[in-house]
Image (cartoon, rainbow, N blue to C red; front, top):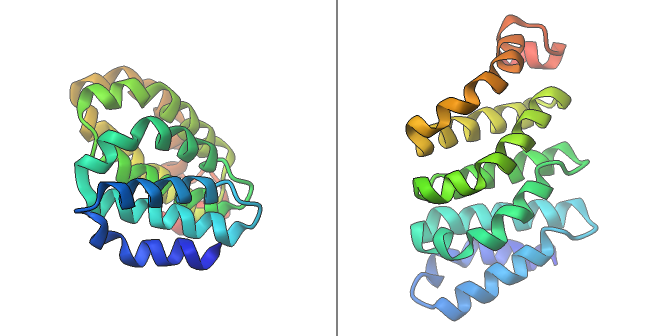
Length: 171
């Protein structure tokens, strides 16, 4: 299972011209993203992020309804490294979606990001959430303004050093 996710990640750029192969690979990876082994989940999420980057908008537009819920669940994975990779992959997806589609997913994404900012002390998760939050703000443009208030407290706490010692090293 791990090897199959890694093989897809390595070969994804060659799938751009084959919709059936792309769909098959994405379906395989979505299943592996919920695997019982943390390395398999990590590799599947890594490969999904690679698909978002290499296959650009067409992949994101056609797969976002199935991909976003899986990524949001993975963002709260009990293994912080897996959660960080899921958040990074979600950022890759966010970067390829148009404003209307982002607005559709924004409430669920922002709820998960806020929870992660408040609950996690893992530097990889915090960095990934901040990067993805920035991508979401840019992608949504002025529509993101209504969400700023909910994020100011945890972001200011982080910047002020009121978070954890590990987060202090990150700053």
